[in-house]
Amino acid sequence: AKEHYEMAVEIYSNEKDELSVSATEKMIAIINARLDGVERQVDHDANLNMERKKYKFYLDNLGQNHITTINAGISYAQALSDLCYTIVAERYVAKLHGISQRAHGSDHDCTVEVLTCLKRFRERRVYIKSRPNETFQALRYEKSDTNNDDDDQVTQKRLLVLQGPIAIPRNVATEQTFQQDCANVSFAIGTPVIFQGLIVTTSLNDKIGTVKEFDKETNKYAIYFQEENVVKKALGVEEQFLHILFDLPEEEEK
Image (cartoon, rainbow, N blue to C red; front, side, top):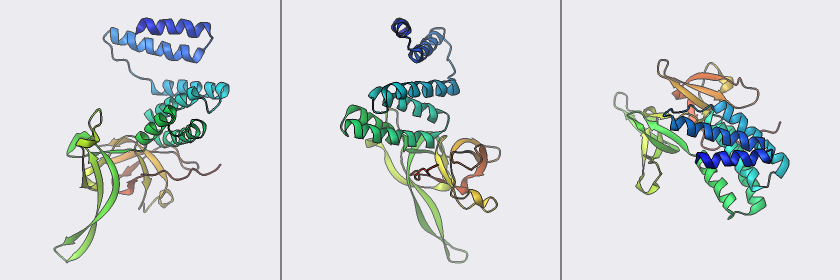
């Protein structure tokens, strides 16, 4: 594999394709690290910058309809997702799917690949707190009426319908669908969420963001905003004020 990539570098260098040279040299560095017994840390920021440049290069030189450009767009979206820009990434892939469908048809291999990628981005992954090593797909919210024995009042419990656990590779036929109390569910990193029920900072209600991390000490999620006119930084928010965003709203025109 290393020899193959080294030959590719020589070919790309002769063609003065600097982007392909850079990407191939990165693969060689990863192979060298593994041969030395070292697990190389991925620089996601550098990878995003490289994928952005590569996509722009093909977009400018080949046009948006070219299969190479579309494939580069998928790689760019994945790099965005790796840094928790999942809302931006999902919208990007949705646009790529529309482009490929119009230019190549619904049954073309390129369109099918983009659609597969889009479905993956649209999955909302969660964990059950008592089973932290297993991943599930959240399908929808439901409510269940619960009787309070003390005063005969009926309260509503918020539930999530889950499917899983998800194996690698995934086998949907072996998965189960069931309800789980939202209080027992935690969001996976990168999950798109929407704010609801905030009392103090009411201006943030209905705003959307992405889960970046969970702080066990404060029991809050760090949320990264991805909308214009909203502070674009991680904000600690309790789980009760967050809902999974299953479908992204239409992007407002600037």
